[in-house]
Structure formats: structure tokens, C-alpha cells
Image 1 (cartoon, rainbow, N blue to C red):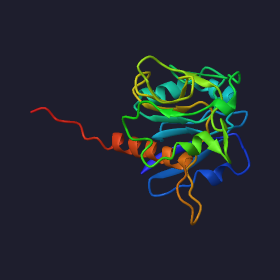
Image 2: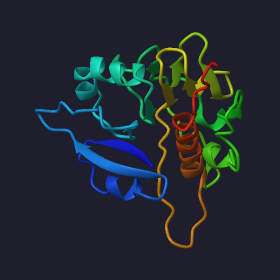
Image 3: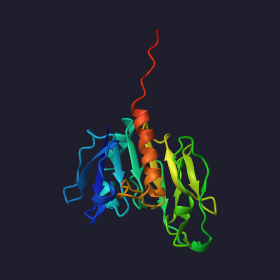
Length: 209
């Protein structure tokens, strides 16, 4: 079981999109004026769309230590402050959304297994709805998805820290499948990453004879 800390900016309904299940147990941490969470008990830190990145900047050193301890981070929001190790989101709306197409570039861990990429590219026939801007990527990190202009949109970083980071250029992800519905792209990518975290945590080190 993965223990996840979900950082909430008190957006109504957010908890409904991150529901504990057989793979992950969520604890919600709501941002207040005294925001200073203890990250130690958790395996993964989840920063959803609509987060408070001024508050996250205040705990930048804690996040770094958390990741250096081999833990994981998902940030699916445009982080406009410098709290994510090695990577920076850049706001850029200079390109026409009608021209945006997303392409898988490097996917060593199968994050896009079972994912229909067109669900990220199009919504009701309109393109460019999902991500905003792009990511300036740490050297050596994987660009999982890029856009029409080869700008990084989803990044998997195992090089900036001892941990594992999945970062999107503000594109939301979620962890809920409503009754009778299939897992849409936003959910499948997220859960594929959780499975990667789980497999990483379950690795048994080799003992030299």
C-alpha cells in the first residue's frame, strides 16, 4: 500500500478526485497560514491542479529532503515558484491551441500503457485544452510527452534527486473512476505512475555473498 499526502488548496470537490483504493491511501493536508506538513510518513507527495505554489515554496527544503530519501512526487499543476528540484514550469500561451498535438517521446516505464493520447489532445473536438506552457527539464530527465514544437509537456525525473518525480505542464491528473466508467487518460497515466512507485518500493536489494 502506498501512503500519499495530497496537498489541498481547499478547492471544493478536490477530494472526490483522489479516492483511496487498494493501491494507495490518501491523507489530505489542507493549506493554512501555518502550513508546514510532516512529509516523513508518506511515500508520495501529490500536488494537484490548482495548488498554492507560494506555500510550496515555503517547504522547498522539506520536499527536497523527502525526494532525496527516495520518495516520489506528482505535480500536475503549473508551478510558478522554484520549489521543484531541477525543473521549472514556464507559462507560454504564444502558440495557437488549434495547432497543438501531443506525442509520446520516451516512456521506459509504460506510463502510457492503455492510454488514448487523443484524450489529452482533444476535448469535444478542440485541441490544446490539457496542458499550458511547457517544462524546462533537468538534464538527463525523461521527456515523456512533447507537443507540436517539441516542448516538454510531461517529464519523469529520476536524476535531480534520489527519488522519482512525475511532472506535467499544468495538465491535471486524477485518481478516480466513477461507477460504470472506464479509466480515462488522466486516470490511467496517474495509476501507471503509482504502479511504478509501488514496484520501486518493493525492490529487494541484492546481498553480496
